[in-house]
Structure formats: C-alpha cells, structure tokens
Length: 129
Image (tube, rainbow, N blue to C red; front, side, top):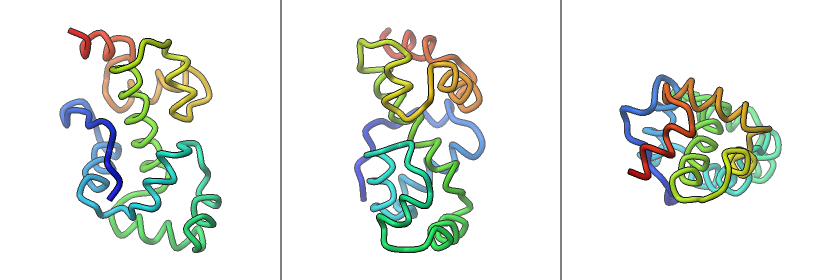
C-alpha cells in the first residue's frame, strides 16, 4: 500500500471525494494505481492502465467494484497533494495547483471548495494556527 502523505479531516471532505479517500486508505484501490497518480496526478486513465499492463476498462471495473470512478480517485489524490503543499509549503496557491495536476489556481479553488466547502487560502490559514 502506498503511504498517503496527508490525511484531511473526515469532516473536511464531502461526497465522492470522501468515499475515494476512505477506500484508498483501506487498501481497496490497487497500490500501483495510487503510486502512478501520486507520481503524476494529471495522468489520464488510458496512460495509467497502460502503465499497469491492463486495459482502461479493467481499471474502471476494479474501481467500480469499490463504488469509485477514475476521475473521483484522481481528484482525491490531487486534493491530497494540494492540501499537503498548502499546509507545509511556503509557495503560492498557483504553485500548489500546478504540482497537484490542476490547470491553474482557479481550477484548484473550485475543486477544493466543492470538496471541502472552504477556499484553499482559508485552509492554509487554519492549518498554520
């Protein structure tokens, strides 16, 4: 199992993202897939499947058995990476967004707010108290 670099509080996550996080922590998601996503969080499904030596549909079926989709899992990984960088880093939100596989800070802001109901800068301020 891949060690998760950061665990957001359960109360901070909502819906599918919380479900993806819970299943990834429980080891239900193949460790190889998590390692690929943590290494390159923007990796498309077809590339991840090729790296794992299987068809994209095989990955989709495995995740569906856990009640997940590839996009939801990838988003959970991206938010985890961004959260760690926001909490530990001194860089800007844009840098955290790019490192986590988001196109720009606005993309991260929308995803973060949808999952956590606060903005990334507010999260960073709360974790530095």
